[in-house]
Image (tube, rainbow over all chains, first blue to last red; front, side, top):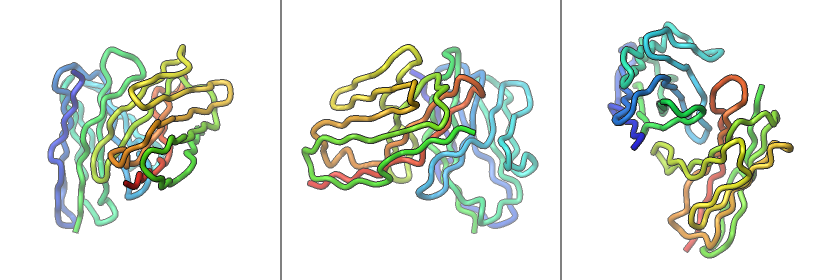
Length: 115
Length: 112
């Protein structure tokens, strides 16, 4: 149980375009979802926390207008990178948390390359 | 601000050796601690989770311990194998803030 999927697994886009990444909890209801970014050879950095039906809480330094997060249902959250630039190229990982406190289940990640 | 340090940053050992990976937190108010494995270009695989009331967890050749008073955790890998080669990340859930804080990881290479 506790499977989290991400789609797409890999995306290449042109600079200036927007990219949407989906995160789904397949077999449980995720009251909270988290979005992380990981640059090469670095650790995961939390970008934002989203609760179903409410606005996401962004970490310091993360532009909320650039990284749009929607958590419309208990099984789906989306991250949209708007007007992507090459410096946004990174590995984006989501996680989902259900009833068990302080427990996150991680998705397989999405690799974004902006040309 | 919580900071997590993992030592060593990288490690290369011959097959069969026993290893210890270290993780330390600047703030010892840790609710639970988790060790993950990450293969290149892949997501995270959870290895061991130590809850706040526990001091250690074991799974197969892996043993993780947590000393909350000092804010330190170790991951012990017995009889290492080439398939153990990966990056190992520790992450702590803080008693406040309700979020995971990750270390930078230890890159492990086990040579056959």
